[in-house]
Image 1 (cartoon, rainbow, N blue to C red):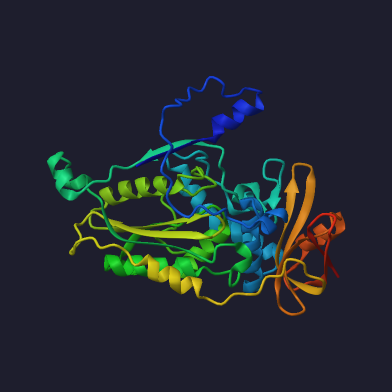
Image 2 (cartoon, rainbow, N blue to C red):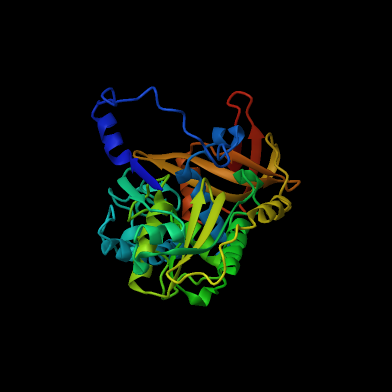
Length: 390
């Protein structure tokens, strides 16, 4: 299995006015087989309001986490710096990292020309970086075939347990924005299949596109954020690099290297797709499993997740409303827009944008906006909802 991204070079070519006319496209190649759920990550209604970009959507989870924890904005920013500073330390010692630079907690959250705000509360240094040139691959085969090929025993890594499921597909349908039933259930099932406990796992790599993914993933696994075993073996997507369609392969490869160096240990890797939507957990080790590998029971998990209650969504709300979570999106020149997920007077959930008023946007960054009241209306002219906070 192999995967690669060349967005780093690709974007440079495009910004220099160079195309890909010299790309040799063999028209005789068959169309690839595609696996997995083909649905887009957001609905057309969600995309119209700006939820179709990870840098807009993951901050919505973060602001919900901050409000639930009861931290002030400034305290939470410092907390995020402390959370991701250890990731930079791992990246600094990773020879394959795209940004092998150790940074202090303060440097990660202090706004500068090189670390501008992207989607509140995330400055650039807390965002996955997709413009990388990175590739990774692993060889997967049966044990008999590995022996036939003469692969040494100390090179063999076994998949002991695994599970895959997705949370309610569209962001507006989620139970809330501070948990992931799919993360919890896939993690528990993978550990059960492997026959190991969290205490027996020596290495972790939690999918780390943004801090909210790490916090929710750790909470659902029952893992403390300051666990001395660490939360990454690569350095994470913002620092080791975030090849969007292949990062988890890098996690597995690095995990294999860790396990080969510490025979008998177990490693846990999680993967995440779309907007905390698709979840996967794998348990790896160097010892041969005590029982034959068995298919996971992810289908039963998916049925359980799909049956979970969730809020009613209204696409054209009107009247009194409160903010459930939100973000403020920035461009290079400053404020761009505010995005709000809220509840109306009947507790129905909606998505809306705020006016592009710098005073309103600044107020949402200065103090907690979750729970803030206001009024929401639907515009037939724009096809969007507009939320004006009190």
